[in-house]
Amino acid sequence: MRRHILLTFIIMFSLTFLSINGEESKNLPNPVLKTGDVEHFIQTFPKLTQDLKALGAEYEAKNGSITFPDALKANEKFQQILKQYGWDNNFFTKSTTILLGYSIVAYGNQLKNVTPELQKALKEIDSNPDLTPELKKQMRDSILAAQSTLGHEGSTIVNMLNPADLKLIKPFVDQLKTVLESTK
Image (cartoon, rainbow, N blue to C red):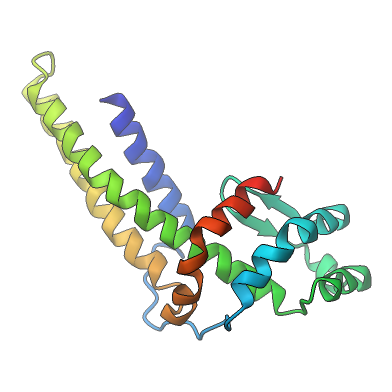
């Protein structure tokens, strides 16, 4: 049961981190990607990441984030590396969009697994004779609040990306996962 509750709170924390100040975007962003961008990203990202790390870019495979110091963006050698791999200054926007899209799809897949886990946790709470009625109510309320937050945060994250971009990313989710997990 603790595993279920811990999983809930980890997901809530992750989603809160990904949302934009907890507010839903009323206007969808413009599309960023064009056909072929995701495939190009998959093909070039592993080698590109190695070259960029040497210049100070940071990539964290576990959460799919990449950081480019502002000074690095203006660096001539950095621009040459991007050009070498067929990218231009749009790489920053496109890579961020691809990583966000991947996160959205991965989140959606995880959410399908979380709801049954939450229901299982609720049943375990109800059937546990060692818990007082007050503690059961408190735990149930926490889980139900977490479930509500998951739905709201999911909507917030999805609104951060244009549906046309998401449509271009979805067919490549497994390949993106492989590339992102293998790039260290």
